[in-house]
Length: 226
Image 1 (cartoon, rainbow, N blue to C red):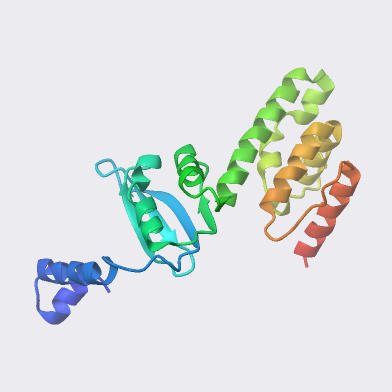
Image 2 (cartoon, rainbow, N blue to C red):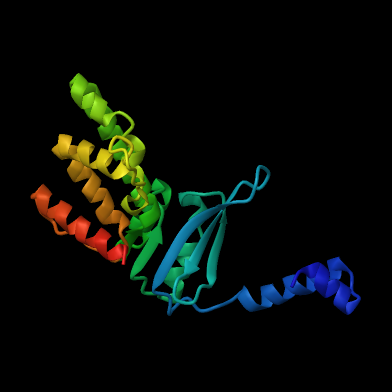
């Protein structure tokens, strides 16, 4: 229910309802015990051109916001670390994106906690490196190899279950991707490493054998189709 809805229902002004709500939130969240906090998440939120960014820290077990800082990066977390020390919280792990400021702050103030990187940002970073590798290999390739690699960038980044089949083998995305992977083993290994990160709850065996990795992924994809 929106503030305007409450105002119309109670006959109070919008400003009055807003002030009552703010007082309630201050009473409820001004003081709370951090001693039982074990797992935290840090992320920034963009509020627009004027306010720009704020940094939010969550207790992952309760979902409660335990810190809000202006801006983003290391400075936005000032005040959090002292409160955690005073409460004697035994933080076991902190999840964050790959922003260097957040990672540096966690490593400095919570050296015994595990630093957990957001899988979405990790896959995004790996995709960027995969694109860079493909571009480097393309410039080193022969004319025949370039013909195979041309247009393969989006195929490498696309989820394999979303590759589109086609009656024409030259337009079949699965066949085009397989041809590009068979052409260059470093590119293929980088691709399967990316898939290993992307697939939730699945693990591709750590192996130097490219054929074994390919077979394992094919089995996973067959299972996803049923």
